[in-house]
Image 1 (spheres, rainbow, N blue to C red):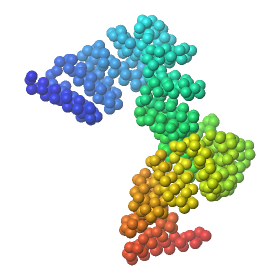
Image 2: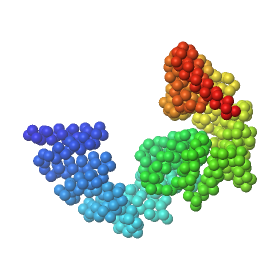
Image 3: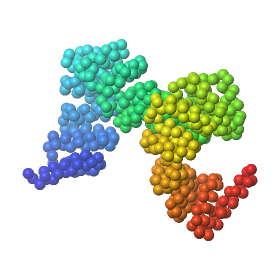
Image 4: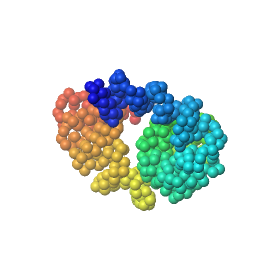
Length: 555
């Protein structure tokens, strides 16, 4: 074998190594070097094909197409290159060009794949009748190809279900037919019939997992629904928008931060894909969550995006008016909401907003009454139940809250929020061991909530277990580094360990984040006294005195 042949083979091997390592650009550079050698036409076709594949992996469709077309200039009937050109044209909505290639492939290669491409393009160009007529002329064995049958089922509304069942007789694991049947049975409310179709579609089928999520959500198993949606999103690679349903399940279990993230992703996807379906609902839910998070300016931005002809527009206006009123006069906002409430007693958003206003004024009894009324209208609402539990705790109705938790947890054992509520009750009753065990259970179910790690750290500090407290608070800071109280609590841990210099670093950080909180300045001053550094003592004493003076003036 000549030296240049050996070099060429080594370069090809290297290119495939780069491809397996996902170093696509390096693989491309290497294959271009291979083309510099004098090759026969068949070798060049293969190298050009591989270059096209690499450009596809980089989603550079123009360059990929260029490589496949170069290969076709050598052999116009190369099946693999024609197929790739067809796929690129179809993916980039160049359907006329795709149809031209599909027609050519049908003439040259009379196979199920060629006929599938042709029918698929006829449907995409809205030539449905042509597609059906072409299908009817096919020979019987080809007509039994399940992928072709599935295509025809998509344009045969009257016979759709019959055709889908015929496909599943031929191939019980056909993914698309199973998903379609799952969708049909889900929409009929036949969840037990829908589940086997989802399972048969394949455990890694994103749409099947999505419908399993919708079924679990309909059955009020929101935590399980969240699991299915997240896995569907991971597998789907943003082909579909599953984020809105994920956000709704997060809301149902009161994971509002997670819900807001999911809604933002859903809105971004809608912008990229120019798809405004459900966009008003996304903006409305975002606005509602931002109000709950006490971020009125951001909430207004979301709510003002809702169109006037939307069904959600009246409710959005209620929320906007409340935000505007709250900024100046919360009591006036409540009065306005109470006026709405006289005529709209079953408006869930109104109930929740009125209760929120009562809660902000610490009128817990009134807020409790509102949520109890809401539960009469929506008896299966997890959100209302969890809000009611937390309000009962705020109002020190611990026995009633505990009873409600017991009833709720019998059906929803994996709902993280109930363990947070338990921890709050035990902490207020000064039963630190039980509070600690409860918050540990919460963290097992939700490892991404900074507040739970902070609360765990607070409990551990109260138990004088400063080392473990430090670890827990570090987790809180790692998830959300912009919360002043986390740094103050970390300073407390270091102070308990007699590591005063480290304690002061964190106390300073708390002050830096929130200049208005006098307790952070007092903490820093106390720690500086323990260190004995006169300059630091003077500095924090001055800060403390200024804050105390400002508070007196405000009073």
